[in-house]
Image (cartoon, rainbow, N blue to C red; front, side, top):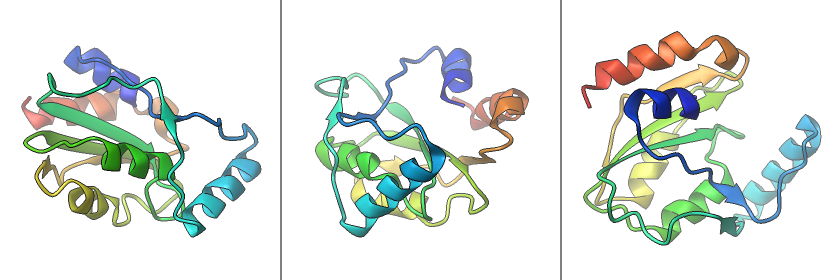
Amino acid sequence: MATYIQEQTGGDLYEIQPVTPYPEDYNECGDVALEERDNNARPEIQDLPADLFGYDTLFIGYPNWNADLPMPLYTFLEEYDLSGKTIIPFTTHGGSGFSRTIDTIAELEPDAQVEEDGLAISRNAVPDAEGEVTDWVSGLGI
C-alpha cells in the first residue's frame, strides 16, 4: 500500500522498523506483538530521518494488530512532534478495519490534523488493492 501511495504522490518512503526485527512466522510475530501491547512496550526504531521538518503531509501506514497500533508506531508518534502537519492514516487488518487507531493517533498528536478518511484494506486483499489505493489517493485532492 505504501509503495502505491508513494508512486502516486512522489513522496519519500520511510519504513518504521524496530531495531529488533519481528519474527517472520505469522504466529510468532503475533505473539510478540501481543506481548508488547500487554506490556505497553516502546520498541526502539531505526533508520528514520532526524526530523520531519520539511514535510507538511504524512501518510502513516500500519497493520492493525489486536485492535491497536503496533507498538513501534507508538514509539514513532511519541518521539516526533507532528504539530501543524496533516496525518493521513492507512492500515491493513484481519477484519477489524481501523478499530480506534485513528483516534489514538489524534490523541498522541493533538496539534496535528489527523484525517478521518483513511484507507483500511484487509490483509488478504492487499496484493490486488492497487486500484483501490490509487482511487483513494486521487480522491484526497492533495
